[in-house]
Length: 265
Ligand code: URA
Image (cartoon, rainbow, N blue to C red; front, top):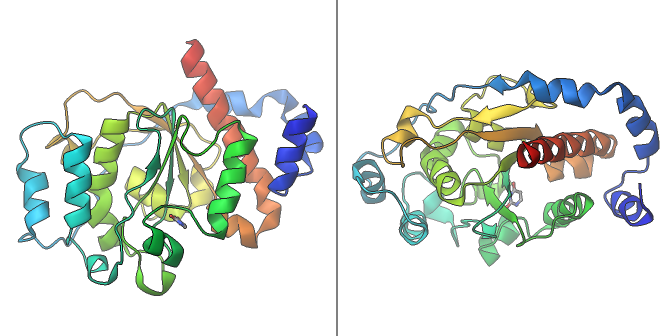
């Protein structure tokens, strides 16, 4: 590992890479990659206000979406209670033709203020995590959240709120067509895999595949390709649990391996 990479890893608090990379010599990660776990995504149970105008637009749409229509729908969305107290809708940021899509939970106070995702402390860590795998905000990477409006008091979004925004996230994926998705934290995992019962740890270190569910297919282009997903810890969690940063690094190594394999295959 070169000195620069060591420096970057030390910035995200990882200094045990030598030990771990030795322990990976029996190629555990490759075994995981070949597993190719296929997840069927059921639509989340929703309690969306059916009268909501923007929701009707989504459900009645015949034509494929474009980014402009989608973002203006999201900005006007009133599908759940989070719309009542938001200052700004946070749609996402980055390259609109990304290789990587990182999905977080939802805006906090600073994101709500600025209208951009991951601008607080966890955002700084996310930027360093991106650096550690040779990425930079805005280049080949898009950053979005499972929910687009701030939950009051920075509480985690409840299932109905995640479900109310799930269409938007799936539509973003459909238009961005990333080569790989990294779900950071439980909320993103629920929104992407449609499963709120399984602990996040059970999904780590697996090559999962995002599949379009019937709910999305109603309004998205048919025959969307499947996209690999890797699940890892949320940067806010990592700020409180420093010892798990090494695990997060392992998840990113898995994601890089999947992407390289895909690019070379
Ligand atoms: N900021 C975001 O935009 N998303 C998160 O999940 C956390 C902080």
